[in-house]
Amino acid sequence: MKKNSQDVSKFKQALFLIAAALAVAAGVFFLGIPGAVDSIPALSAKRDSLKKQLDVLRRKNKEVEEFYQKRAMYLERIQEIMTQRAALREIVPDDQKLDEIRAMVNAAGRQTGVHVQAFEAQALLQRDFYVEIPFTLQADGTYDSLVSFFDRVAQSERIVSVSNFSLGPPAGQARGVSRIRPGELLGATCQVTAYFNKPTLK
Image 1 (tube, helix red, strand yellow):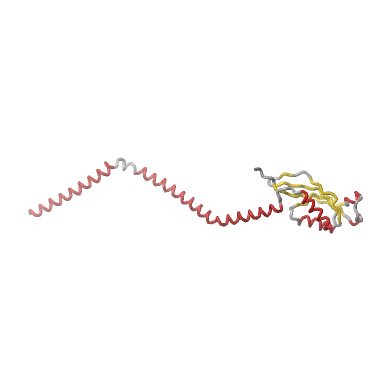
Image 2 (cartoon, helix red, strand yellow):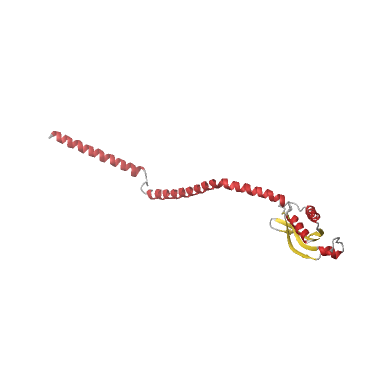
């Protein structure tokens, strides 16, 4: 019996020690960390807020990754545009170069047998990104020579357009200066427009 009493006493001592340890732990938790229980909802809200921020950052990171995947394509397209711009600068100059336009028209006339009776510049027309130089053109020639003349004008390096085109009696006949028999001539009247780049403000 004595042995059993000792065992019971030891068992009670062990239970007492476990209970004391739990009490100490609870005291440390509740007394050593003031407001720990009350702060749990605030921590939960903070966690949710951080999760939302993380989701936003992940979406932005995905967009950046997609952009960099297309970056090579964008750079290639930019290079193509720059090449096209340089080519356009060759055919749409920065200066008016009226003498070059007159020389081109007169050369086309000589090469096709067309008599350029008048080629007069009109007032400049300002557009958003360029300037138009309209010319009034009067020329005499046979039908075939006029077709060849305007084809050469259209094929010139300088971009030009022809509008308000009409055919009638030759201008030279009225002025008495035509050296070709009137029956073989037609008179062409039109507007020839050339272009140059609009000056940029510096």
